[in-house]
Image (cartoon, rainbow, N blue to C red; front, side, top):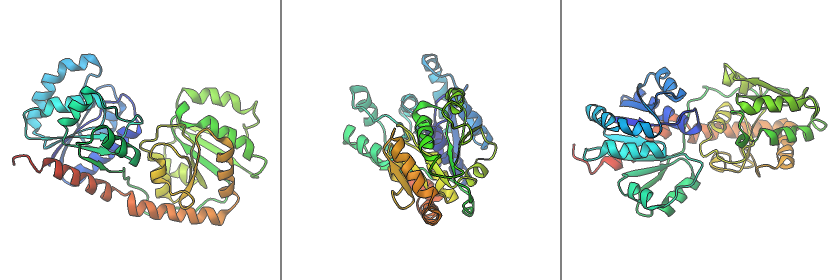
Length: 351
């Protein structure tokens, strides 16, 4: 099948990772895949690294002027499915598919719920299928566009062949960009509460972003300079995560797609996460991890302490997390369920 993915964000994100992971696995399975994005986006660089055929276009209003050329190029590729992963690329997908024998599929991994306006209802009426990345988005899509075909397909990822042993030290790991929505400040407040209760406590937050520098200045005045470390971008994420006993995802919102939750699960680590976005779908509360309210440092500290101070509980949850990933969040299920959507969306098209 000829599949064209459109993802025009100017930064790496959960949505981008969802699209890239899917496109790379489809290409590996023998589909003819192209990945289109903004010329200035690191997402397009990653697509190239994965060996995908790529095409860039200019973002913003100026990019509209290039649509006739994009339509001509798409005609040469002859896609059977055009999968749009953002709102702007959805509009482009409809333009590329107009009067052609191909289906438009819109994947929603956005943090914001869809809104039913005259324009979005028009677009929905010309969209062959919607894919929702989590249960909340699936419900919102069905409410906004009752006539639309909506399927829920949660992301899957590749992971290490075997889970790793839990380290002996009480180390909490977090891997995310330093952005306010990711909840680093809540984790630091929780660490301040935990340091007297958990001997030898360490908290390591990998990632980059403008917030990192400001938070670094606050460590010594708050007495956390011997507890918390910000190593920046890590070269080997699996090694970084394997060194931790527990993964933390204290996000304040967003997390419609959570790459980190899947990676912690694949490694065999329990996760303490905020009950936001798609995290309640991924983390089975009390079985593979613990869900806490966002912005609640007390609840976060209590949940982390319950794992850090009870190695047997942590090991049991880690094993359950790995099993859940193997059964529900691998690449095969992810690609198979998406292909089912594609097949149904194209069933009415001429061969």
